[in-house]
Image 1 (cartoon, rainbow, N blue to C red):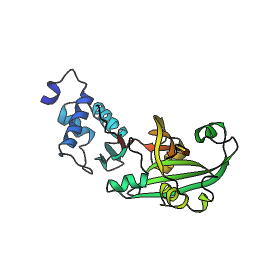
Image 2 (image 1 turned 45 degrees about the vertical axis):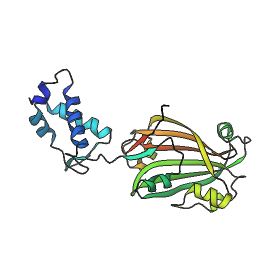
Image 3 (image 1 turned 30 degrees about the vertical axis):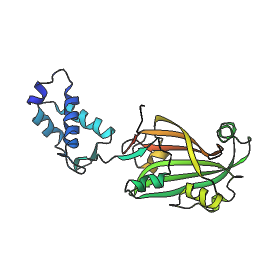
Image 4 (image 1 turned 180 degrees about the horizontal axis):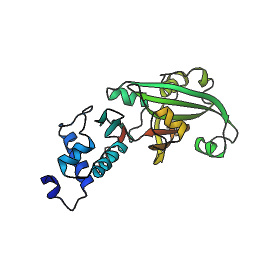
Length: 245
């Protein structure tokens, strides 16, 4: 057993190995795309069982730190996309500001009647016509999130005829309808992907994801958009900057 394991016997071996790999990533010893030793090699190197090595890699895979490729091995995939959940901004602008290339695929556009929950979110009458837009968000051609937006048709008539792939919904609202969104109330929770969503996001079924609901407002405090999003947790991390005084 290596010295690292002997000095910290109170900490489970899998946790020690996980922390060692994360430390090597932090200091740059391991980089995105680097191949890790096999389970057998890790077991021999650190004096642990192959089961412990396998468990460690499984945890790192679930957390999006490594990627297992059948027949090739395990590789560092610690390339997280940062999203600010405090500053209200469009997905397109957010990604461009980070030097990434965003793209969008429109999955469906339809007009629906507002049921009680949706009517309450948008403060419209039950049964009022709402435009529903479902889109797949990608970053550097990698699927990241599935978003669905609901906007009262009376505020944005013929919106369904304007929006296309790779167009920014918020820019359309501003340029075509004179609506500027300035704030949002947002809720976030952990969930698991269903089979249909997993296929779109190219992840395993029942993978952990981040589910968000938000209501966006204009300058007059009017509810303009209710949206939901399902975001991959393996490649996205949310952050915020808070002033404590």
